[in-house]
Image 1 (cartoon, rainbow, N blue to C red):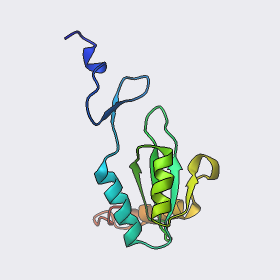
Image 2 (image 1 turned 60 degrees about the horizontal axis):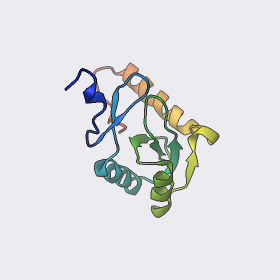
Image 3 (image 1 turned 90 degrees about the horizontal axis):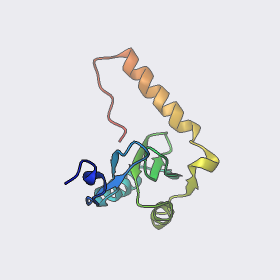
Length: 126
């Protein structure tokens, strides 16, 4: 095996990343299960499909009514929209509509709560 042969292999579950040659874990069924569980456990969830970039694959950002959110890798933009439609969740292209203000507000509240009491941990958001 040559010095650069490992970058030519098609390792299962791994996708070649951007120009750095890094590898990024692809989406899997655990991601889809987690996203489905997030939607079923919360109300007012909307989906924001984030396009592939040089550092990440396509992701689906789910934001609940109170701003709680989660983000996971998905196989494609079409898969993300189909997934959201099957669960009755409105989905948008994040590059077009942006990220909802309630998510930023949620993050601010979490940060303020952590600053007010640094010894307690708020529940994880994803």
